[in-house]
Image (cartoon, rainbow, N blue to C red; front, side, top):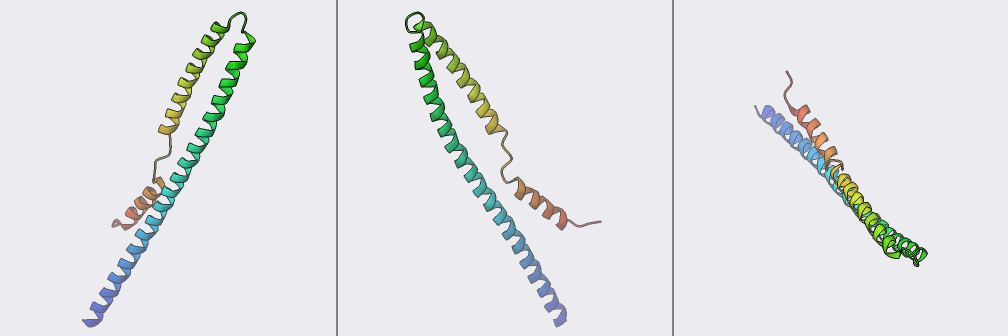
Length: 126
């Protein structure tokens, strides 16, 4: 009887140890995914600000160039046309940015897939 009790306790300890190892591995994977997502967002933000600055400078210089080019004849028409063009472009870019934000990969998808595999393996088989 004592041998069965000790064997049962060893099995419970091994099971607990295995479960702790599984949970630990999944938490490490989750932490890695959070870190990757944070780095990706930081990179996207930096690139967004850099692109916005460069684009703004380019637009400003192009507008000044075209206005000076048509200074004598149609400066107001040129400024109005360029203003409309930039508003249309800004609207299109805002729509593209919204689509990009909505189409991102589901967060923690790798962790969820691994947990689903674990659940399938732990379910009783017929």
